[in-house]
Image (cartoon, rainbow, N blue to C red; front, side, top):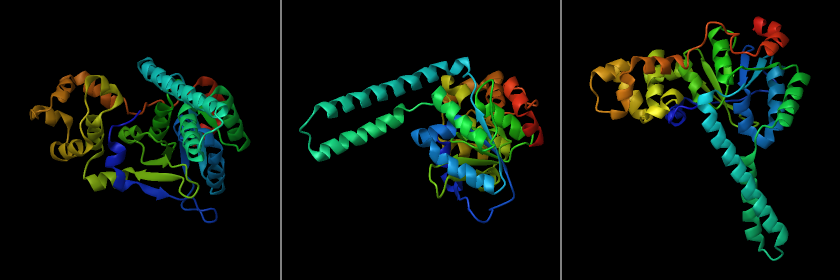
Length: 304
């Protein structure tokens, strides 16, 4: 996932979200966690997430963790590239460790630089193994926090649940959720115990940008989204949003003959419709949840 430049462009709408340990900030919320997104934010420090979950529970919020299923075929190349990056980082970290263990006469400042490099490389090499995933799921179970796994990636499941009115907030680093039209509040994890999230509120964004929800979605599509990357659609966010304030729709831009060669592909109606539909919720919110997980937490999901 990811919308090129959107996180930076919407910087002024990001508000710190603190969790008060004594006085609830607001009425209990139904919070959906994109498990892979938040765990890759914390990486090896994932246990720091547990106290935050406990505070949310004490305030009466209901939480649901959604884990990815199998990545779609079109993302296999990206998955492979990420794996290669992690492997390369792990190899470099091991080489530096071997060097430090073998060397006896290294100045203290040089050793410190190399040790810091190992920490950065270990962070880059971290990945969610089956063992770690089972450990985290066990901790969630002990805290009575349900979790499910999708048949595809977690974002589709979470968007479907929002579309069905079963979630109030999604926790994820991915900005694509805002293009769905159904996610009203997005909490971006910060890995900070005092300010664990930044909140992005769609109502505030639309009012501040003077855009309809549909125009906002089209602006995001122009910035560059997954279904269109292979076609080279990638407009700077500031330009994309200025265009949408003026033209309102991508179709109007295309009819006005704006001199932007990367937009020519959008004249294919099916391609543009596919990009828009990519973020839309499915009517059947159960369709992208693994059947065995749907059975195990079915009552919880129905009660949301």
